[in-house]
Amino acid sequence: MLEGKIALVTGGGRGIGREIALTLAGYGADVAVNYSGSKEKAEETAELIRAAGRRAAVIQADISQREDCVRLFKEAAETLGPIDILVNNAGITRDNLAVRMSEAEFAQVIDTNLKGAFFCMQLAGKVMMKKRYGRIVSLSSISGVHGNAGQINYCAAKAGIIGMTKCLAKELASRNITVNAVAPGYIDTDMTAVLPEKVKEAALAQIPLGRMGTPKDIAETVAFLASDRTAYITGQVISVDGGMGI
Image (tube, rainbow, N blue to C red):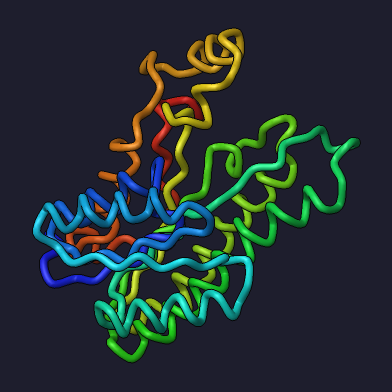
């Protein structure tokens, strides 16, 4: 499905990002694994990709910094070749009630989750326009679609991802580049594992399918949107939430 394609996954060292990187590799793509802090986790992901018979590159970059993003794309191209697929997955949380949130907490999330995605979209767009081909898939969130108490910074960033996706889809469509977003719901990750049981139970009660999603649920949707099977789908937001947003 993705044979011969080169993908870049931001925040690809662990969690959902790792699952996305491995799934893309499983479908035939070579993958550049970006990480910010944990080189060990990123190297583990890369080794799993190589074990699957695909090429992998591990590249450190703080995507909230434009110069890091420029270097990230340069190193990916030098190691694997110009990318065909960008997955904007990297993100952080700094949760707090709006009336208590500090400017730093707000800015950190916007800088990484929104501005970082913009930098990568911009750089990928330039590469893909020259190739007259590309797939950009960004992770939004159900929080960006419906809002979530205590996450005004995160909700703003993830809603912004949706706006950027729709804008860029229109700008790049003539060059055979599709731009879509995936909005995960309640996914079973290390981040959600530490939540109190009462919080988990309340979330599960809102999910018609009656279970948390898995990183694989997200990764398969991303791979689908990254493939030529979806060549006529662009500017869309696919909710992968077990029906939570119905």
